[in-house]
Length: 153
Image: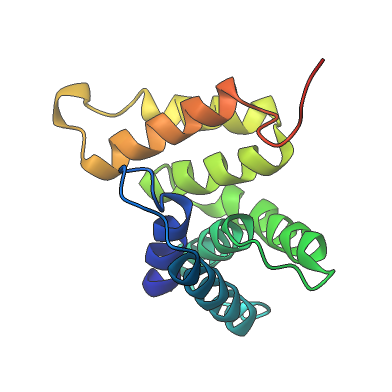
């Protein structure tokens, strides 16, 4: 699962550091993320935390990849449905904020963002980890840009 999350994150941030984007590498990375996501899709985990990690990894992977076999939205909806079951049982944590943030990026339900912010507000601002800073920035970006693929007149 960590491998899928890492790979999907690499895909989402590919080229953002100013390095050149190579089509063959981009295509290979997309295919690898998609294939791993399909392999894990439909599996269940035994603990709440591992189920949340699975939902998060799959949600990020399917969101990141350009591949679509015509069922991508069904996959994402199924993952969201699983997330709705897991979130209430998950303790306030970085993992919960990450899952709330990526669920928010799909449905833009303000309650999800508010719950993420409530957890973030409990974090000691002087001792934030890199992961905490990254998810805070991602949530802010999703909140500020709710229509990333649409032109609004």
